Amino acid sequence: MKSKGLHVAYISFVTFIVVAVVSVYMAWWWHTSGSIPDLVNARTVFFRDDIPVRAVLIWREELVTSRVRGSIQYRYGSSPAVVGKGDLVGTVLRGGKSFPIYSSRKGYFVPGLDGLEGKWRYSSIWPGSASLPEPPGTLFFQDLSEIRRDRVIGKLIPQPQILRCVFYCPLTDSLSSDIDGGTVEFRLDPLGVPYRGEVRVAQRMGHTVKLYVNLPFFPAEVVARRELRLFVNGGEGRGVAVPDSAVVIRQGVRGVFVLYGNKVSFREVEGFPVDGGRFMVEAGLNPGSLVLLNGMIAQEGRIKLW
Image (cartoon, rainbow, N blue to C red; front, side):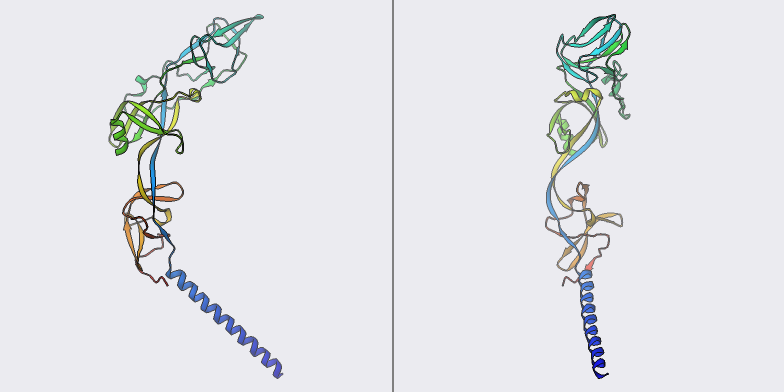
């Protein structure tokens, strides 16, 4: 009985020690996690303000017709093709005979229509400040489809010619300066090669500008639809990046919580969100500043770091 009692006492003592150690550790952990907040360094980064816009395209085009009715067999199938002057674009089959159709000049031959041929002009798109029209996609004709006498079998977009476009864009100081210089910089992809387009006409409307621009290229890929996505360079600069979670709005003011020594203070900032879950601070924060990662639960005052 005495041995059994000593065994129980030993087990109780060990259990007490384990509970005490765990309790002390948990108390230290909660104290430490509550005293030492998650911090991040505000880092200097260079940025480019790419403004996405929808541009409608304008070009010269002419209809291609057949002199006889029958079944049309396209040389290049139902897709746009680069052709030279005098190149065969299609053949009309009728009564065992074939009637070739040739291109009148060099350019892009499109075996289809979108219904805007002869209607889509600068004079009808530019005036006013209404939203730009949304063009339909091209309806391509099927190979060996039946056509009637003088029926349109497609269209030709002569080359070379300047591809033009019209678009609206938010007006920044940098973009305004570029416009005054006669060109705007843009990309087809935010990570792509920059291009320069010549400004033909610019109409400023408060914080927005309407632009009529010459593009420096005319790729065949654009002829199926009269619009293009552009990323206009609204300016470049240097700022300080912090995680989105560090930025909060407090009493209508956007800011972050900054640690100086052992004191946390709310600091108003100016900037904008960017990709990657980051916020670009243009004013109000210095590079290298220690910022509380989670601004939603941060509070001003002194904290215990250790």
